Amino acid sequence: MPLVSLFGWKWRLVLSALLFCAVIFELDAQEQRTTPGRTAKPSKPKLGKSTNKGVRAVMAKPKMKATPAAQAQTFLTQVLNRGKFKKVGETISVQSGDTLELRCRGKPVQWSVPPYLEEDDDGRLSMVQHERYGSLTLVNTTGADTGGYTCYPMYCEDTDCRKEYNKAVKVFVFFPDPQELFVPSSDYYEVIQLRTNWPTILPCQVTSPEAKVSLHREFPPVEVAVDGTEISFNVKKGFTIHRPRPYHAGALYCVASLGNLRQSSTKYMLIYVNYPMAPPAPVIQASSSSVVVGENLLVSCTVMGEQDTFIEFNWEYPGQQIGRPLYTQETISAVSAGAARQQSQSVLLVDEVRDVDQGMYTCTAHNLQGAKSVSTTIKVVPKGKPKKP
Figure (spheres, rainbow, N blue to C red):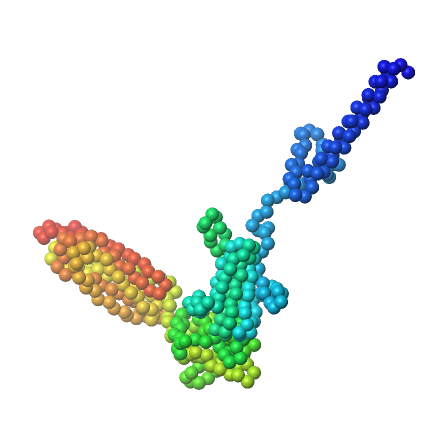
């Protein structure tokens, strides 16, 4: 073989070997770029050409940025003795005198505690924000600490933070006390309104979920039936009167028993209030829309509504600007129209009208559901000038 041909053949072998090494090096580099912890940009296939399946198998998928919904959910844990942790449910019990320690995942978080603890800061309660969680610690606990404890994750933008109520986690904590079955109260009587349009709750809060609780009427002395429909009981809330009626009014109290211990709660004075179904709908009418100076003017404001509902009237009138006194007459009368209804009316009296009395008269009617205003305009005509019809 000629020397030149032999030399060219050897160089072709060297170049082939170098090209093979380059391909292997490039494939190795692609694998390194797709290893965890590094970002790999997927190559885009050229239009009109099919992609190689082998390359697509090696190619890493683009990583998606984590969204708040994909983050770990907020939850509460209770710190037990010897560094043990327990995820809490809806309720837990901590013996009176022991320490309550809760942890809530989030950065930052905010806590809500029973009003008794918020008002009486005696140094027993501490809240600390750590790197990844917030902690709540309550020492020297008593039955009075019984209630709801809530952790709110906070959403922050720069220095502006707000509670994420939809992610709040709650736990009701009982602190059983061998001497106190009910959460202590400083009030001997507690007045509660029985509203016709809203359920009424008698707290009767017990310190132990094991206590048996019954509802009693002071006079006549009798136990009130709790059927679960008209009246129901929940150990975290107390007794609920779902649709209050006049016969529910009076003095009631609760009795709790656990083992050989039996105690009575504070007394609840229930007052029945007939709440209207809707805000009032007043109608305003003047004795005349055009009044001659010196004549008298009457402006009435009338509300038709349910019987035994109180309506309050307020007036705004032009004479207020000069301190002209307000004279009104208010009446309530029953209306016979099948259902029990009543007419409430307020009449504004303006004696010897003057030029300053010209303008807009506004009546606002209020009831327990809201308020509504109506207005009318009065024109004052000088003496000797005929009134327009």
